[in-house]
Length: 127
Image (cartoon, rainbow, N blue to C red; front, side):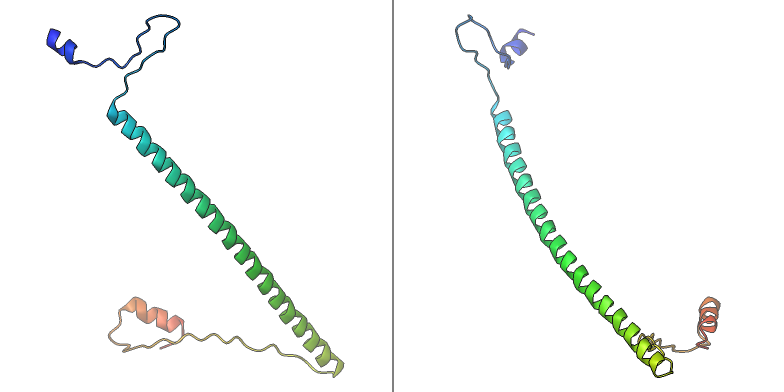
């Protein structure tokens, strides 16, 4: 027991008198850990600031796109109203154009498909 106590390092301060400074023994590994944690905290803080700045720029871009799309859709709506009014003045009707979206599906063979696929194709009127 005696040799174990002699190799043990005391980390607590020892008080000598009231006026003297207090000495604290700090391990080198603890100092390294503190330094490393400071560096990591600084890197994290810089990363968060960069992300915050980037998010602010992205929000501005998104807002500008939103304003642009809003103007575009309002313009389309106004044109549609104008065309309907012109058609009404000419005692006619305005028919809106059909959508321009196409789905293209290539079906290799109908007989080789499983029943579920056949039923889906039948419901979509592709058989």
